[in-house]
Image (cartoon, rainbow, N blue to C red; front, side):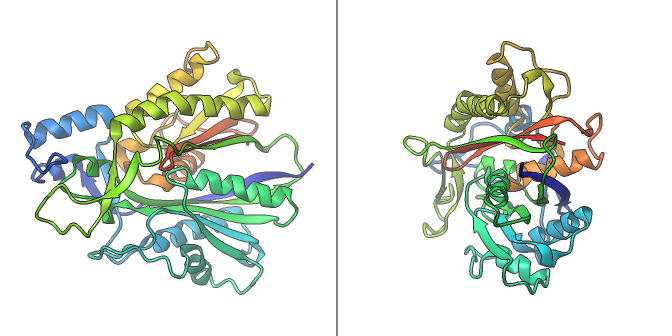
Length: 354
């Protein structure tokens, strides 16, 4: 039996820390350009109560998304103890390319995966490098694709990276800008013959009828700014309602395919989008099995790291595996669930046994 196993993980957490209090003097506006009736202090307090975010990390001006991806990739390769020349695929999930500090264009030529391969100085031309654009679930989908290559017999070792510098594409006049952050996470996925570990099952979905433009690029709320410059925008309430309704069902689909009992799921590594939303998703997921939510089943990193899109799940996984989140650990034999939701609207989940 051919299966796929994560043999190494790595993370790059940017050093620039931006706390909630750093937004006190921002000029937040409604989407029609009008001013809020509430003071920024009240806006920030409500934001913290809903999202759970205290602070987030931003990349240094000299770093781009592909730089962060490279730093995380180096750590994952070292953790797995492999030679980069042995890699068959480099799959890099992002959404906006390399956006340099002070610019408004995303640069994706060459692909960011190719840039990482170049930085790793891999000479092997059979190491195929490509990008994946799948919203926030991009890294999870990259792991699913790596497994498909391995099961098809065309790969033995894959590097999967999720990296983003969302601080470069936010509208500072939009209070939702406080959600977003920068970061990168990576893993090595390898072929294994072990039947008691690795990827047990997965599920992926794209909802693209009414849901397609819940996340989109739009102009600044500051009407005086140029209309030609676009920023990441979202319909937060619609995303929340979509996520709490559909993500639990997709997670259940993956678990049911795996044959694993719900009681045997030790941890759920879910996209760090919004603490209240994640808590609601988990409650509804366990409600589908008529079970209570187990204590400490959902590790969280959003409080200090914010929402770094494709980087949140691999970063969270690496931090727990390395013992860097209090009261959270994963042991040999533990079954975990990786899940994400984001632009598309896309949803995916992986049932994985260590």
